[in-house]
Length: 435
Image (cartoon, rainbow, N blue to C red; front, side, top):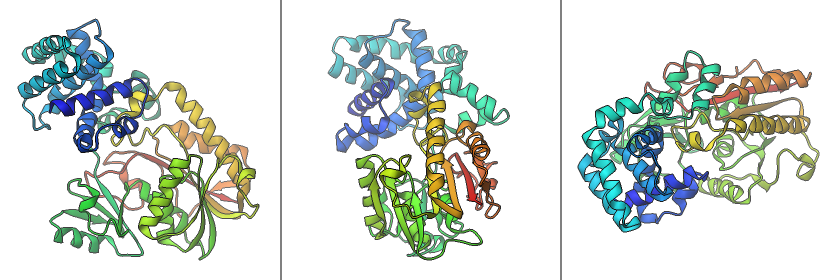
């Protein structure tokens, strides 16, 4: 436990310094990575509470590395968290002090004193800490205020949802089987899952992909139910894409939506991404699923650099965004983003839309999506685009879901609702048609 706490503190320190949790975990020793990730997720979901408590217990912050260990321990000792962990509070304190002694020497006594005081006075400290809005919601104040403006009736539910563990959702390869059949395969392996729709399965409990029957052979992929809407929206309209249609996946990495498109239809598909490492991930995804597409490393906003001049029948633009709809899967996002990021990313989204629209044939369709719940990256973005382009309109069939929120009472906006308690991530979808 002391070793895992130390690695988790390293990850939390990296996030507080502006690095992504994924990058921080990549530096963690492989044998410690699963446990470190689990602890880091807990800590980042309750970091606001921990910061408020540490301020009450030690107004002068210790050195960054010691502070990260202290905050990690306080977050794991928070009343809403410790019931979910297999470590009794006094064991956790003991192991935190051991980690401090191994890593920071003389700071061990300071860590011991702060954590033991927290255990003695936990109820009063928690009550005092929760006067701080960051501790109440475990999000930056600006984030909560933005959600309050965009979603005045749902904002508190959205903040609470971000601190819950998401379901593990699977997409069954349409070329290999269906959801009911795959549920039976899971049961034969001692795993429980529930099918909904034709190709979606929600697991009762998350598990390593190595335990999923047929994963290595491409029979199934891990993909949230919200993300699984993209391919059917683009392919499955009343006048759906014909075999051999030219399709562009403009920001394709890591390739989940690319693969889903190819599972549903025989397409000539070009998958773009501007990052060489992420482009390789597209290739890895398609290799596992035995699917083929043209892959190019290029900036989708610069068509002269990659477009051959032949118009596309359909375009998927899964645009870069704040990721505000997938915070429960990426709990570091809330601490990494800044208010200015929304405007900057909205400008990138608008530039991509304007650049790609001329590459679409008349009558063709462009599906714009983001994994964001901020309206500036969703409905506001599309309203502005329609004002700029008189030849653009919203396709009537299939209807665009618009904003999908990661809430149980909101999922009915989706064409196929998942089981209760397994709401999809937050997304925005608009299916545009060129006149």
